[in-house]
Amino acid sequence: MGFQPSRRALLKLAGSSAAGAGILGLGGCATSVSQPIVGGDFDWNEDARAIRKRIVAPTFPSLHVRITDYGAQAGSDNDSTQAIASAIKDVASKGGGTVEVPAGEFYTGPVHLKSNINFHIAKDAVLHFIPEPQRYKPYVFTRWEGTELMGYSPLIYAFEETNVAITGEGTLEGGGSVDNWWPWKGKWKDATWGDHPVANQKYTRDVLRQMAEDEVPVSERTFEENYLRPPFIQPYRCENVLISGVTIRNSPFWLVNPVLCTNVTVRDIYCHSYGPNSDGCDPEACTDVLIENCTFDTGDDCIAIKSGRNADGRRVGKACENILINNCTMEAGHGGVVIGSEISGGVRNLYAQNCEMSSPDLDRAIRIKTNSIRGGHLKNLNYRQFRVGQVKDAVVINFYYEEGDVGNFTPKLEDITIENLYVQHAQRAFVLRGYDHTPITGVSLKNLIFQKVDKKSVIENIDNISQQNIRVNGKTVELPDV
Image 1: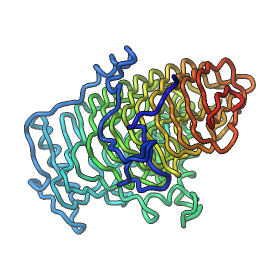
Image 2 (image 1 turned 180 degrees about the vertical axis):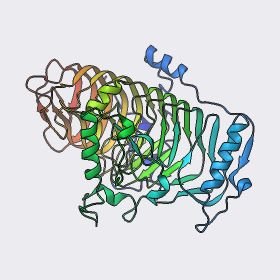
Image 3 (image 1 turned 90 degrees about the vertical axis):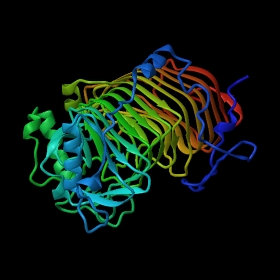
Image 4 (image 1 turned 120 degrees about the vertical axis):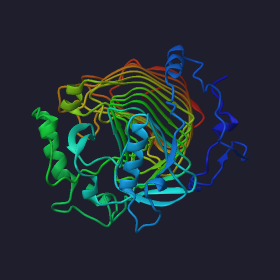
């Protein structure tokens, strides 16, 4: 018998509340999503089990202080930036420990973590990041959409540190809104802002990308007029990173963006941000990453695996590898589990399992996006046990993303496996767009059930796709006749 959805596969009705709705079973009963389904330890794959065993969250000395011990005061009239910095510096000088934001509403500029610091946001605490760009200077070594530069400090940043964490049950509030940060995107959806002649990211972005193509040193990639919004959380070249428990809201840009890090755990976080480029979790050129038990309700991709853009990604030359995704929930977003589009360094060894996703605002479930400018060698990507309620396009592999086929770096796919995927309702089951000179190959599809599909799939230039038990609208089908 083919794949049958379990009771935990039960999916949310279209349009139901993201925060409070239950997951509906095929029998119409509500059930909890708090317990992981089978295979939580990746018992189906030896390599994935080895990766999971290697990934160990950091621990910290017993020293524990509160930012109020260093002068922080709750309330929007009080700036806690210096108090937080003093607490982190003091605890780090004593060998490390926990710096706690206690219950209450606190306001701050950027927070820079040091080695052996657990930055803890307590239950009923809200840490607001003041949306004034000048506070996020002096510039730091950072990445923006896969290109390195000296740019605004991320809201929470660590550079070349070891053993850093952001934990707790509280909330991190980024301050992104129609009035702050987000308008730098330029014209976007039905937003009230338009293309500002100065305060628009494209005027900085285009110059930065050309600098990268011209191999300008990163130290010289700096701008007096900079309109590139900072990410919320960005540990950069760090080892042993933990982000756990917190709610992250209204980010200026990407929410969680570890770059060139090793041994990263992202667990039990809730990402809620509907702004432009509000990706949930984007590990970029990292090694050994676990993303588990998280909920994403975002304005862009929920999880996107990245490794640098174009010439800059190839210059750094670091793949994103050994990525585990387990038991996550995706609601609104451009894509559920995504590869790309800044993927020039390649990606290998992705194991994603036990994810549930559903929303009328979820554009894609599984998505690979690149082109012949970005390129990328994508190898050993594995997806299994996905349950999808409502989605527009279920499985998307697109070699024509944005720029199309105008470059010299043809993407390469190798050993891509999708199995045990159940989709309740999709507009299209597949969008697969390869090149005529380089079709999509290296893909294996097994036990994919699409209960209801409205439109015919878009399938262009595929070759040697392994297929077993694909069912659409109650019928067994084969690509390209879907």
